[in-house]
Image (cartoon, rainbow, N blue to C red; front, top):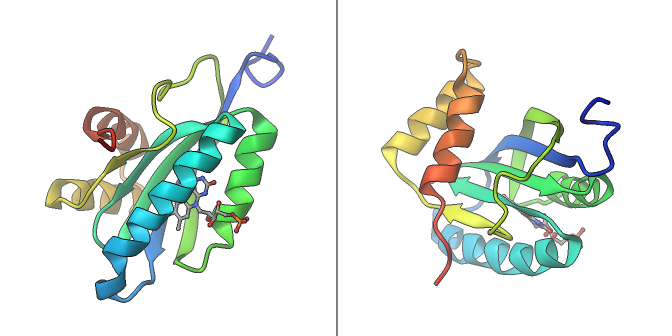
Length: 141
Ligand SMILES: Cc1cc2nc3c(=O)[nH]c(=O)nc-3n(C[C@H](O)[C@H](O)[C@H](O)COP(=O)(O)O)c2cc1C
């Protein structure tokens, strides 16, 4: 049976986007995104991680297919960012971010370089970004 046919499969979506907020609004906007998204993701049974480089977002969300689709359509029409590009989207057996309704990693030059590599389509860059999201994402305490 393929992962997509398996009812226990976990659907996921990895995308990158461009933040289109004025610099002085960004911190408050990211706080707002995290606050709203964590509540909503928990209610939808979604987990994942959000990375913000200062001008780009990268986000991985996972969970039941219909709920990933609901969050995806909200995210795609959110006016706080644009150029939403799907990097990966499929199903896998198990969650990668079981503990996090939305883990967060903030700006760094290293993360910027990693997201740029994904946008440029560098080999294995999507897998590397996912590994980095898992490593760097920290809980909101
Ligand atoms: C970069 C970014 C990431 C977001 N991540 C999520 C998320 O993981 N879950 C979620 O429900 N909403 C997320 N949102 C917020 C949604 O876009 C939206 O504002 C919220 O879910 C309310 O949805 P609605 O406008 O369809 O009512 C995100 C928004 C942005 C800009």
